[in-house]
Figure 1 (cartoon, rainbow, N blue to C red):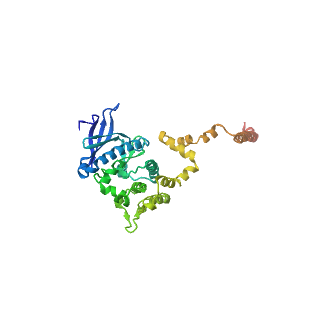
Figure 2: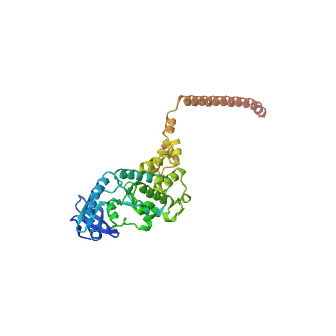
Figure 3: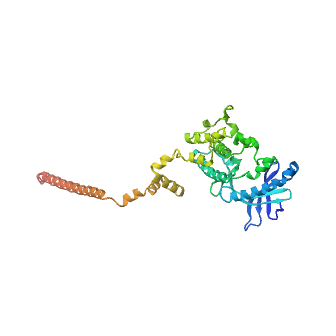
Length: 366
């Protein structure tokens, strides 16, 4: 892999392959500083052999879709940038941004997600899908393997946009993508398996991905009703009824019963606060300040942390209101009076004792 592709790109290692495509980790040797990139290679020779009369059209489609995908990627930082695309003999190459991060699939091998984490994941990715759908793009293959949690900010990045392969798939000369079909099929709605592509299919796949994140189970590990297509997943996760209802609607067997758009699903998701949001609203200042300080001062004792998070208590200790001053004045006056009274009584007692002891002393003198 030492030779350069297109006199510019060095292939570092192979990341996977399909029937007529391969994916590599590569390096752009002409960038100001060497940068890593994802390089996809598509074999076109098979298309020439299977449908030679359609090859010129397919070539035009590839170039057009690559240009469109490049434009799409430049408008949203949660879609990998398309740096370059070109032809080389019987091969078509696509060069994309390399996302440093961890796939959602790898993260789920370690632990399941909480409801709050899934809500954030959904909100973020629904915004990406709204943007893509508004530009007439479908992802077609959303699943934990195609979501990368970027190291820099932990934002989910939607990788492996397969729109470029749309017309190649129509010609039946290329696979869906590099992921095993046994895993990918469970995240796809039934209408997608017969070639019907609508925005609702992306929402179905995202809903199934959210359920996998909550339950730790892949779609084929969940029970379903064969007569209705309903998937029984709720017993494997304890979440709010609101989020469960949102996910149930997203994964309806009939696409007409799902959300009609990413925006509609996002609006429904955000129509009610998270279960713990009401608690945070009761004392927002205290909760927010404790959260901020707990990261920077975890070694402080609880009393120090509490005083740091309640400025009002500090103010009350240093600047007392008038009522407090009057109270302290009365207490001080009372203490002085008590001391005076005690002193007087002691003096009287001493004199009395002296008077009683004098006759006794005099009678005992020689």
